[in-house]
Length: 336
Image 1: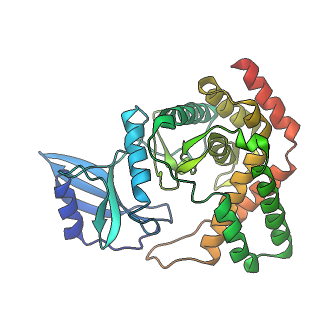
Image 2: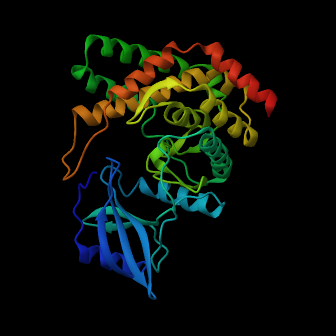
């Protein structure tokens, strides 16, 4: 859990009244996540209790946040199950608490599935494709702030903390990703707003039904393929009782990719570059976890994620035979 900003009860209560969400009865910090301060807020309105999520943003500023919040609002309007930001009487959905930007959204039903089955992966693949299609006419644009430029800036910062083997891997992979980004096939990848962080703990299910995607605060305009690769790296790996070992699970991956392609078939460039994007997704999260682990911020409750997990994922993706993934995609192309 991370609570960087302690929000006084009275200040939170005043915001909720301004949003016409009722009287605050409970303010409770949320487990999980290390980027922002999050609370469950329980209110009473017209004799009924409601629960919402209050987020105080620690790294993102007032100039960046409208993209994320309006993207969520846009998706909710298209029928994609996502938290919808609450507006005040003036229609504003970005607020201020303790001098920092803040937002309040509805709490989704259900719970996260940390040991997903093929059914869960199919549901995620289907809804991710629908999200990509729904976002194509979103009117705002912002680059993925944890994309290639950030990787190029951050690798030199973490290098002093790495072993010789880790340093060689991260340097080699960064060079490879810069090479991929210069390819014509990369330029041909379909793009638009993406979630960019759709891990198992950012999706909710209830009675086997997908009830929502949340935590859009790494969203940005990027390739749809990168978004799919991030999901494959977290959802479609072998899971143990306490974590996952990072090894590719073909059955889970097949379920996700086939469901995705049934809604939005991958083009030739995407089929060609999926192995590279799996490596890109692994690099992105290994690098961000290295940064959080070795250069942590102060927080009253903070447990950064172990970076070695995505080091294992990256090494496995580098060694994964491209023809295995190509055959997987070919099967799904025919099935679709």
